[in-house]
Length: 607
Image (cartoon, rainbow, N blue to C red; front, side, top):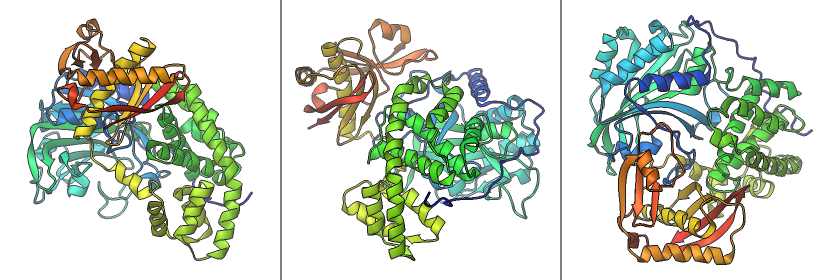
């Protein structure tokens, strides 16, 4: 097998660190339940996890933080559940993908969060964080270190947070002031809500790793488990900061990292979230190494969650990331671990055991997920052997550095992502011209890696005129589909960009041309009628009496936000929308296609 020695990094199975919290190791499920109960008792309403793919934010491919779906409410819109909220949120980021395989980084991850939308401020947030960590999680206060914002030209030093921590008994030498790059959150894009934060770290070893080792240093001693962000500013396009309409608290506790700390581990992979998958890979491997096994486990978990939201592998947007994760996992499994026959169905089943009860909306789509993974893995595997042969030929021709044009050939013709090409090149000690590759990519109008990463760090919410119009159009489309196809039709997802509308819905048969035309005519007629669009906040019982439909109803919500479009459409939604349907513009359906078993997708545009 060619390149059988690729990426054979030696690493022993991680051993538990010598930490004891005088309790049985807490599993991830227990952590979620304990967190929600704690903040419910503090007057917070539990809200559901939003989709992994943002519904109305084309500037970000995935939900990247617990606060991501709450941006309109952080900016001042009233939330139907009030000013105190809590949940656990599925998230995905690729900006740290090169770090995956170390002790702490993941692509997919979960965030526990609690929010104050103009309610409480620093004292309550910090005291509750301390109470939960030391009393509910039983982490000794003596192992807790914190950091605070040291101040700069944009905002003063956070003396208030430091004083609160000190009043709780945290010694001065364990309260570390750090600069904006460490202790300031947001905005993710050019503009938006932001502010200083205070971060909580657990000393996982109790031993110094050299003089000056402290939170913020990459010394391996500390694990960050929680972050309290005090959002009081909105960054402007000119780089200045102005006070927000309301002061918000946005907190985040990583499920994976906190679980590792509670289970006495020095990494996120040696926990109940991953250990069965890692053991399976070790059993199947001919040349096991922990680094590659971690990458396979991480990437497959992320791929399962993405595929569970109806995304299919492609060469752009979310589909590109899904393809990239699947192929990187397959390459590492086959040529890093020496596994003959990638056991991805077994991996799915193991992750299903861990997550099905928490995320049934993902793992109840087993047939669709397995179908998506099977197709992409088999398609890529058949190309690998010829790809390696071509790589050897190119390497022989360019032994010192492979030019961008050749890299682009390997990518477009043989399906190798840049990540995989880099892995091969590193194992052979050959340099590659990444800049040249990016130039080739751009020249051929493909989605470049740099471009994808830029999307991940784009603005948190796009409320531009055309996307707001598109959002209203999806409500009309939803009702029109029900009128034409039947009341069994329900939205299963959507994504709106300035270029197009993508709407996913439940239906088992291909729509006829007549049905498509009829739906388009209904939507257009409702736009021409210039119906009034209004928002109400009602109890769920009242909303149901009005016949409100929608994707996300949740048992925890006392009040819900609904939008009524004339007497035609009533739907659960948080907004934003136009005020009159005539503002939507001309609506045109471009394509209707299969998405998976029992699901269809419509692509449309506004002109």
